[in-house]
Length: 141
Image (cartoon, rainbow, N blue to C red; front, side, top):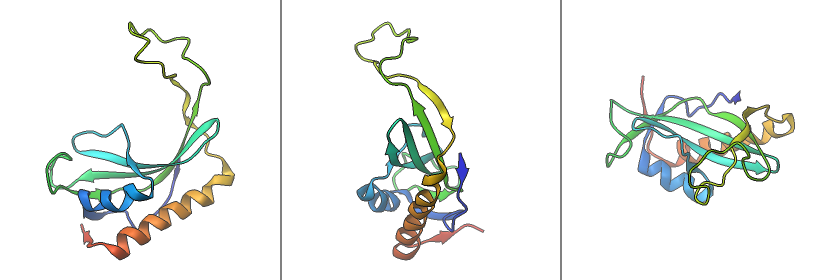
């Protein structure tokens, strides 16, 4: 994992507005979200490893993410690599393997390739431009 300092840190937006800006350019809310926090993920590469730009966010003032009009504050973005296994998971103990055929990651926090760091930083800068210059920002001091 490589942290990417960003002007997005501690900036607050309506979640729905962020979704409307980021989803069309390939960002998704990652599967690891909870009621009060989550991540926007952008998959940069998937050749042997998944390389992600991950934008963490938290609900403001104890709100929950599924509440209409919820505001979120961004944390520090980071670059993340998941190295995955090829083929089926030979250690799976699922009673219904027809529905769960995905392999566990070989390394869920693999080393992020040096040659992709600058690209990851540029993706974060692109999001800064989209969100900080085209949307209503509410700073939390």
